[in-house]
Image (cartoon, rainbow, N blue to C red; front, side):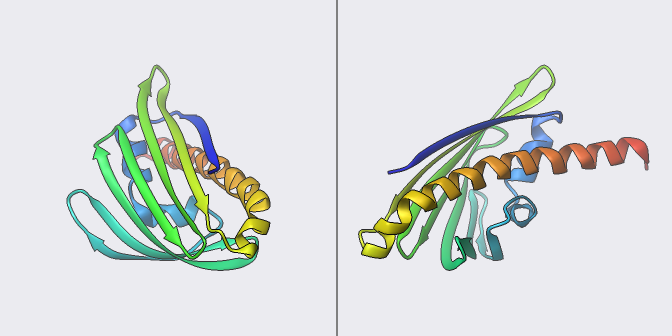
Length: 153
């Protein structure tokens, strides 16, 4: 089972970073491989979604569930698609200069021949996607904050 961990520090308050990352509508802004995200159900604890995930040019219909484990501290996302399922945990903590986000992901690939052949390449691809997602989240939030400072309301 491939496991990934990435960390980024974002120059923004924890409440802002958590609000951005726990809003699934922002994910398509930071994850190039995520397409057609549809929110199926929202509750106080989280959100159930359907999306298309592009993996090496292959479109996978994906069911996702995001749970707010602890506000401003931890969200968990489970994903399931044909041939792949996984869990992502994002942990948020305050730092002197903003917010540290630690993304931990565990993925399991199916047993079909296709999945076994794709697993090594898909593992590297997913690892890069998670790393880029965190960097893109940082870039978007910091750019939005800079724009707000440059043109106050």
